Length: 112
Length: 115
Image (cartoon, rainbow over all chains, first blue to last red; front, side, top):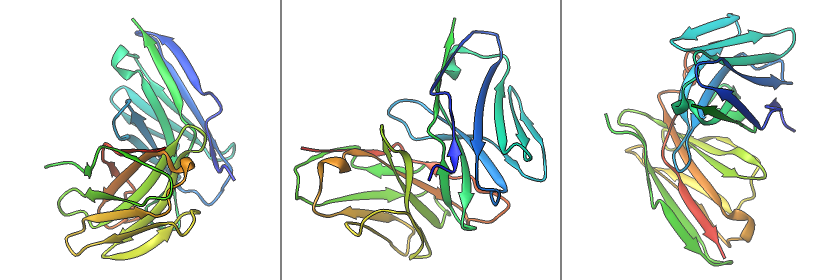
């Protein structure tokens, strides 16, 4: 069962514009979410996280929004840069431990 | 501080063989998790070790096993390899798995190809 879903496999954005990556989840027990970025031939790199007690968390150009009623979160990147081109995964921990459930990923391409 | 290291980076094995992958976590990290990444299934959790004990296990057959040593280094083993085991195997380390922070730090992965 896919408890975390990223329905857009790819997204293309012009440099300087906003990138919005979306993630939906089905398990209402999830109370913490993370976004990771992955370049080819590298492991995922942690970007930003959000607890369910918040609806927004910001870190520089990256902002994550959480809508608990819709079971939806989104990652906004403003302004987008060519170096942001990568695959982005949303993830949620389960079982009160380090068992992360990942979405399928969204490939972001930022065009110069 | 050195990051998570994984060895080897690339491996080619034939069906029926077994393989052992190694992971050294960030110094001080006591939790080590393993994930499998394939084009079809995405990133899937294999198992987690904390203080030499398996704390969580994903939905993988018993051919996949692991262990953790007293210095927190971890190994995973896959026996009787199948073609479908070809994947990128990622190791991640973190602190105590405290509920205040679920950040995991990933290594570069081991690319396993089974022929």
